[in-house]
Length: 101
Image (cartoon, rainbow, N blue to C red; front, side, top):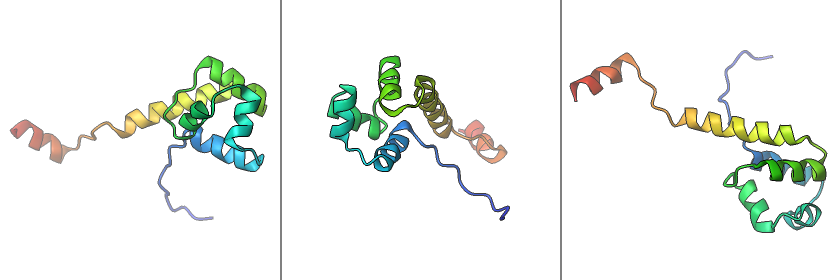
């Protein structure tokens, strides 16, 4: 077992859902039929462009046998981590540069 650090990958609902669909050999059309969500909505989820609402979480939970809380929490964690990735990191070096500006 290696103690080497590996970069963290922020996995969104879309990436997880894509893996689930592949594992279940389901297409976007199949999931659309099962959930009554439009193929466009599912495609937006797959691209991590559609937030998971309570309604969508309940629908995905019923279709894929994963709890609504699972979907809501995964989406919330993805958005939270994404916002942290966009924050500037202040170090003594760049703080000095900012003060001089």
